Length: 105
Image (cartoon, rainbow, N blue to C red; front, side):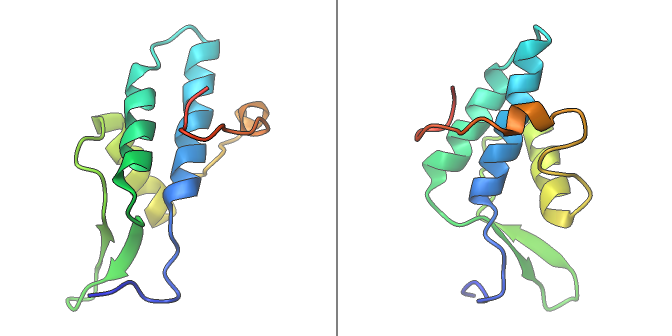
């Protein structure tokens, strides 16, 4: 079933959200490799990631990369479903920088 014209495509927002969290982890001295891999998985897919209504009344996320980390998959679900912010409070300073083509800084 093709994507509805009103469906939001999440790819750019997901890369931004993952990049903000990667920068925050990097600043705190935590590992960032999972975020790097997740950003690569989203950008390498080259397919629109969007939410689609099902016949049963629920929704599903279409073109979700299969090789996301557990943390990345949970964040993707929460962002698309609306229970997480792209740039959460306290991470605004990380969202100001522009992300270069190819994903990661």
